[in-house]
Structure formats: structure tokens, C-alpha cells
Image (cartoon, rainbow, N blue to C red):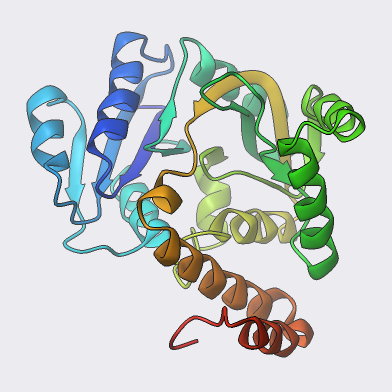
Length: 275
């Protein structure tokens, strides 16, 4: 029977995380007919062998190199044919029923192309996993509010958690767990591969919205996101990847601000090599 849902997981040297998320999908599999595809970006930690040994029904694609998050997801998407596509980070854990709740929410709203769940960290605290279109002012507001939220500043915490508790139409949802109709993903050419790591989800959702379709956040589905693994493993490399993606994003969406951002990063000593 053809699958209704393709779950695409990109992994790079994250064997423990990958094993955990695949186990969560195996112990309590979604009722929605599905296939799981793991795209491995040339991991050196034995991840491919682990997948073959422990999860033989998972379709493993070895990318042949570290091709980046967007391109690896595209490889996984193109290897499947299901009408629905779930992009899922390797550093997530999927509770029973979460995928089905996400699918139900998407199918209940024909005007919506993309839906993202409530993401929570290992302690159960909700992650701020959606937002407005990325711009200098939006980044500044989010950075300030995010720091206050992380510091548990009472007023900001109450305001943020109130927003996180209600379903809403948003500009973007996190690519850590993002469900999309294949037709909508293909209409925008899948993920833009100029984004090696970071901001590809904001760009993808912007392209979807430019087609007149909507992006939605729903707390009816909840997924655990043990975020920050890439940054913890290689903080300098992760920072450089973010800055390159940020520059690429501004060049594409806010060209008038691109030179300003480059000058600012150069002044701060944060301009990545080759940018």
C-alpha cells in the first residue's frame, strides 16, 4: 500500500539522537500509513550501520558528503511519493499520537500548506518555534524577547506562553518538525539549497506564503526537541553557518539590508570567511 506520509530525517554525526527518534517512531508508530527516510550526510559515527542493523525498514540514503540540511531534505523528499511530507530533526523525540494529530490538523484546514507542532525541550518547557517574517526589526524583537523568555522574566514568559498555547496562522514554523503538502513543497521548488544550515525553514515558509497559501502553528500536537546539538558540538562552525545563511536570506529577501548586515558583521568580526 502506498504511504500517505513520508517522514524525512536528516542526520550528521548524531547516532544517539537518530537512534532515539527512530525508536520513538518504531515503538508508537503513526496510524497514518507512512515511510521513513533517513538521509545521512556522511556521518563518521556509525549512524548508517546503526540504521541498517536496528531499523531495516527505514530507507537509508547516504548523501556522499555533508551536503547541508536543505539539500539533504530535498534528496529525501525526491526519493518519496507520499502526498504529505514531514521534515523531522534527528534531535527530536515523537510522542505517541503526535504525528497523527499534526496530520489531522493540516487536513482540517484546506487553506493551510504547512503546519508545525508545539515543540518542548527535555524538561517540558515550550520552545518558541514560530514567528514573523525575518527582518532586522523582527530579529531584534525576537532576540530581546527570547532572552527574557529564556531567563524566565515573568511578564515576557506569561505573554509568550499565552501565544504558544493557541493555534494561529504564522509566517513560519520551525523546520525541526514541519508537515507540508507535497504539492505545495513542489510548487516552490522544495527547500532552497543555498541555505546550508539555518533559516531554510523561514525561507521555505515565505515561498509557500508567496503562493497564497498559509502556514499554521498548532499546540494540538507536541514533539520533544532536544535542540542545540549542532551548536554544542561545534559552536564556531554553527555560528559561521548561521551567519552565511543569514546573509543569503537578506540577499534574497531584503537586498537593501544586505550590505548593512555585511558591514555590521565585519565590524563585529563575525563575517564568515568567503562571504
